[in-house]
Amino acid sequence: MTGSPQPMPLGRLQQVVLVVIAVALAIGLLFMRGGIQSETPMEQLARRSVEPEVALTNGKPTLIEFYADWCQVCREMAPAMLELERSTQNRLDVVLVNVDNPRWQDLVNRYDVNGIPQLNLFSADGQPRGKSIGLRKPEELKAISAALMNDQPLPQLRGVGSVSSLEGENTFQASVAQTGPRSHS
Image 1: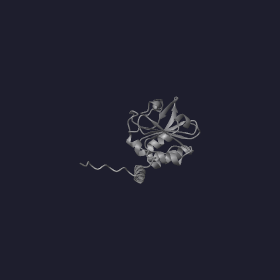
Image 2: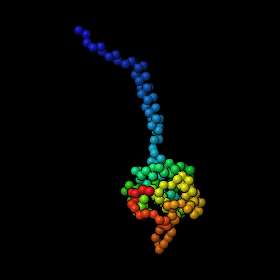
Image 3: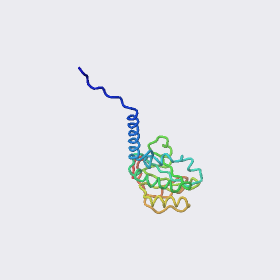
Image 4: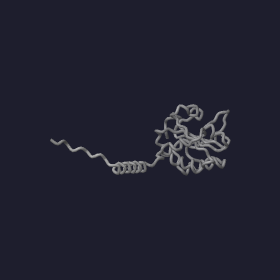
């Protein structure tokens, strides 16, 4: 009575070939999924972002974006924001603040975040220059950043307002609906 045939153990050469094939498949899968750096533009910006306190005291104009991971408009604007951050490096600080992170609740309250994405704009000496609420196109972001870097008036864009001192209070000089920080434009 003969039993079922016993499987032959793999030879050394076959084992090496299988390992090489597995490594090649893993590398191919990695590249198909976007490589090692598969972070979204928003994740890259958030990771590269300097602390708001540092940005406002380092002698560079600053753009603080209040955003949320779930905000579609924020995600849509993220590639242009990342390009802005890269192209103005060492001349403008681009800071991301997630409104859903309790760590930043004091900033959300201090800057009266009432919609996202909200951009708060600051001069090189850390003084508020203006605010922008809603989606910004790449050319609008370039115009805003150029005005900040060259210490010029902010461009006349819908949803962009200047900040001025009125009885010691910062006042947003544009018509913006008062909603909650977790709403979006």
